[in-house]
Length: 117
Length: 150
Image (cartoon, rainbow over the protein chains, first blue to last red):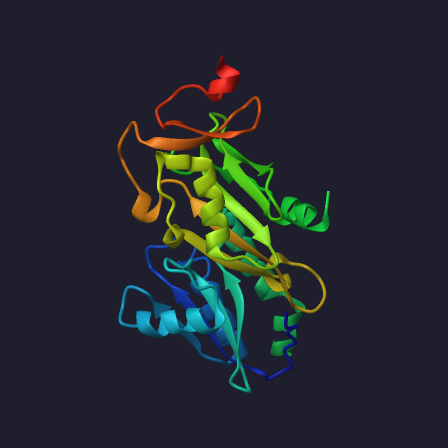
C-alpha cells in the first residue's frame, strides 16, 4: 500500500473513466472533477466507455485501477508530475449517495487542497 | 467487533435501498464466512440484492465461489459478474496519508449477463428467522427458509 502525498504543482492531470448513462458518473463525478482540474489549471481527461476512448479507458483501469471483466465506473485517477498514476476513486455499488460522498471527500481532502496551494 | 467490521459499519453500512426487487430500504447483514468478511444487502422481504466481500486482498473468484455455494445448483454465478473496488483513505474521508484501506467485491443479484425478467426466476433470499441464505422464486411471499417455515 503506497501512501500518497501531493505537493503543490505535482498534479499534472485528472483522468475519469465514465459513461453518460451512469448516474454515479454524470454529473456527480465528472462535473466536480472537471471543476477541480480547472481550478488547479490542469486538464481533466475524460474517457467515455461508449466511444472509441474505451480502449484507453480499459488500459487505465487494467494498469492502475479496479479491473474486472465488467468493471465499475466511474474510476478516477490522478496523474502526477513524474508521470505516475494514482487510482483515487471507484464508484460505490452501495448507491449513488456513497459515490457522491466519496467525490466530496476527495475534493475536500488536504491532499488536493495542498495541490492547489 | 474487529477493525474491518467496524470500518465497514461506519463508512459502508448504509442507508441502502433494495435493487431489482422492490423500493424498500435494505439493511447490511454480515454472513458467517471462513476468513473473509461478507455482507448481504437485504430488504424487509428478505431479498438479497447484493453480496459484498470486504478485505485487504480480494479476488473475484473468492466471492463468486461463496455466492455459488449459497445458490447451489439453482443458478450459475459467473466470475464476470463479480466486480471489484479499492477504497482509499482519500475517498472514505479518513484522516492521515492516503492509503488503500480495503477492497470490496460485489455480486449484484439479477444484474448484467445474469439478468432475467422471468417472474418466477430462482432468487436468493435471507431467512428472517435463522439468517441462512436460501433460494426460492423471486415472486415468493415468505421470508422464511424451508426449515424455519416447517
